[in-house]
Length: 333
Image 1 (cartoon, rainbow, N blue to C red):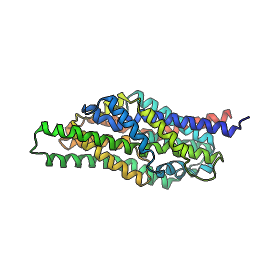
Image 2 (image 1 turned 90 degrees about the horizontal axis):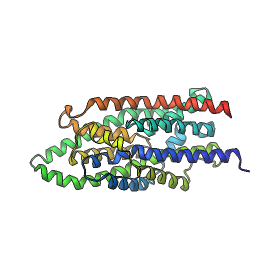
Image 3 (image 1 turned 180 degrees about the horizontal axis):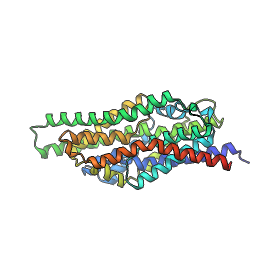
């Protein structure tokens, strides 16, 4: 008969892959919203491209996975029930925000869930490595949107200067092709940062369950998480694509190219610095920066305000949900 640990580990793996799947269709808009909204790619073409490159990008490295799985909370100090509570809290939040078409952060949902579940389990805030949480998560929570806005603004301003004497029809023709490349690069970088979060949480469960002795992401975990995210991405996220691609600002191919290239640069830098950033935050503010480079009134700030409000609610709300879930689990087990 299978042991309780094996059964719970299997349940965590399945739940983590479900989270990765939901993350894929929730965040698929990040990489393809601009190219679909500017009609450079059809939704079907964009989704297939994004799914493929999300899968490939997931194998860049495991630095972000280590931050999630062992940097914020020591896996040897928590139980597997804590891990599953964190996942359930993040999944609930993702489904709610997806339903209402709000591009919130799956990354911060998972981190908030992990912090809330761990604190509720231990009954103390000391279980959290606050220095890592601040330097790798909170700091980037504030910096990445600002950097995304600044880089998008700069990219577009430079393009305006370079193309100032070029006919609009020629600009559209050139960037209709160039934007395909920028969308591919963004999808690759999205996979490189986001797929690692589930890799980290599954490996954390393996350590806390005593199934592996040290934190090292197994190959089967990498492949499973990459496939789950690619599959989720293939289902798309039309509601969020509409919000990001046209809800905040009207964009043309040159705008989409600038936003995607700017966002890719920021996400890649964060991944190399082991930071589990929100690709949603970065892409969204990059689009805002591109639109604002023409004039600030080009951005629909009312929509932007609703999105930013959701960002700040994500971590505390998911922490509360996961904290309640681990409390209920402890009563039942």
